[in-house]
Length: 554
Image 1 (cartoon, rainbow, N blue to C red):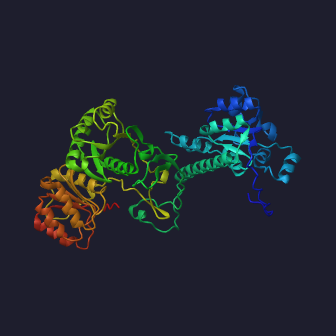
Image 2: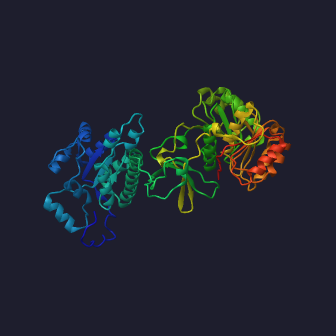
Image 3: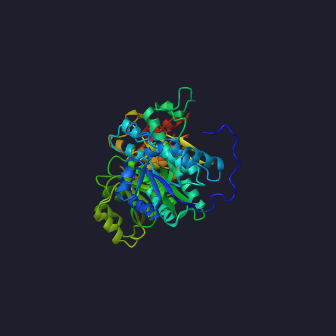
């Protein structure tokens, strides 16, 4: 807490620059990994160890003489261990400033000894809430109180106190104990890591508590678009703490540094990917992987998606993954070379054989799982075996740690929206032309409208059956997107279906669509010129369906 008295002068420049000897440490750890190494170093150096409960018993088991915290505080552990270290005799020993005579006098007056190192790791809240069947009572009990307080106190006083917050730092701690003390540079770095860990810990708790308590924007908050779709209003605050999961060679271009970060408590989607083989993933690989995995996840039957520069150049569903992959790769073989492939079922040997056909090469293959024989084939037989990355991406909802929101960065800020992942409901669609699409085009229309939602706007998808055969993406003119999609499809457009991610603003596209032999069109509708577009479709004898739901993607 801030003090009412005016602050004392800052320490002199040389304070803390010399090694601080380690004579007395406080050890309180939930995770006992590596404690034997610490114990050996403490015992060898003759360091006094202060501890509590299970940690004290573990240290004693390794031959370390331990002073129990209760002998210092004069008070036993109470409330089932909820209160152990929260006492002035502990925190004064951590926070005392070694260059302040008044601090030293206070310690002497009250018989308090200083701590030169605090070794603490926290209750595993994130792993507990991720366990199936975890109850709110169990989660709340694993909210650490004393641990973060000890860590923050030592980190604040890093000029004189070192703080170790996990087994990954024990090598540094053992080295410092063995040589007799810590340097200021070491203590500063440990303090940075400590504050990062408590911030991450609190962020996980805050996100869980918000979900548990149903804390969203209050009734007085400004209305947001989500409310129009009967969705809950967006949170008034997002608390995020991101950890680096992957260091990348560079970003979109070699002169840009890059890494992938994720909330500590999520391991679904790309945050939980596991690379089985191949070169390291790049920034662009990950963007393409995201597009591939998200589109594959929208396909209900066994499906495959082929991505180039975040847009699908092929996609299909089929009876098997191999059949879907064959159709997806055949949609645009030229673009498929050096592409990213994702499937929504286990990648098996038959699918591997499809990729091993002569003339094929892919950068990355993503799947929920791979069979051992598929991995062996792809990593031993093709000439590009050392290059292809095989990546397992766990299924599930990756949006929970961000309050169900998809985040994108803009200069100085973040944009947030609900992900466009909910399947469309064909029962809500309306035939707006005089003739209806034949029954056998119902599934292709559904598939085409699923595909177009993951193309970059303005977007047009042409499908033959449940296979994407032509795409027009990222155009400033919708008629240009139509022209490109039909050119890509060629003769395969005849008898197929065409989907648009937003309404046709003019009837000029209808003539192109008719000439290509498209059998039915699906689009959201909503233009003031809808009557003109419908009239043009009727004149062309072209069935048209309105979905009343737009799917822009920028």
